[in-house]
Length: 159
Image 1 (cartoon, rainbow, N blue to C red):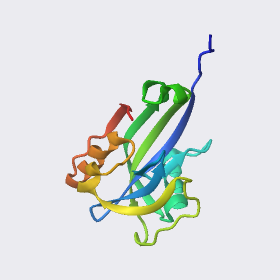
Image 2: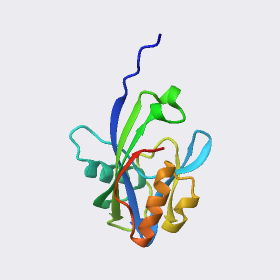
Image 3: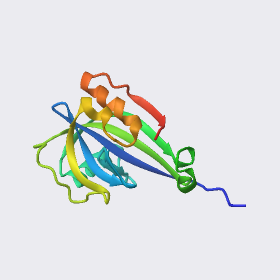
Image 4: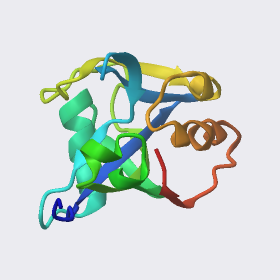
């Protein structure tokens, strides 16, 4: 009998960078599909989550941002989802922050892009539900920012 898997919890910070009705997304090729992700990544020990979001956005996009407020908290517990057999040890907790660019939002180009990243794109908030944004559970809440009606809070264990 296999020993039970003990997940390691990884905390990270993601950024919903909004400017002129558009959100900044990373284009990516992940597991054979073209998709989008929010910029962001892992928190360093001793680093506040809002600073992790700011650092990750700068590394991946080249933008310096102001972190305005936390929008959502999302979990992903791999054992509960589609790839449970390979992701049983995965447990991520993501703080997702609303951010605004401090400089020219057209000056993009980070120095530490993710391996799967193929580019950066400003997408209209209203069009986000039609994009292959991962995780899919973020598409509607992000689109709701266009009308000022986001539902803040805990999103749960969503894929």
